[in-house]
Image (tube, rainbow, N blue to C red; front, side, top):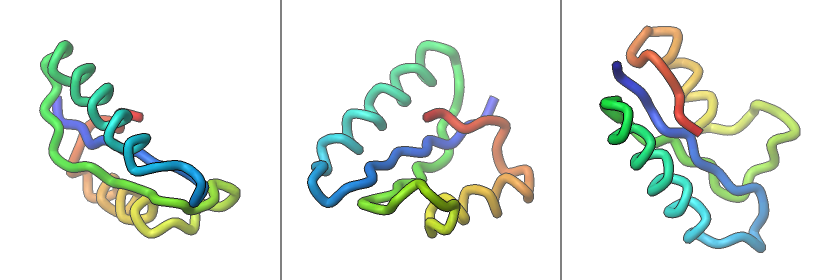
Length: 73
């Protein structure tokens, strides 16, 4: 099974370590379950009130091309 990881934080007050921690946890989950992670999509300090976030849109675009089976968040 192929997957991507989507990690994000929404505020300038949050730190990069938040992203690193999310990726670490998602990667551990993937490894434990025999899932191959193909890519990380990362949203930094962008509101989730809309889906108008560049990395989120890239992920949606790639999902339409069936490049991966699942998204780990």
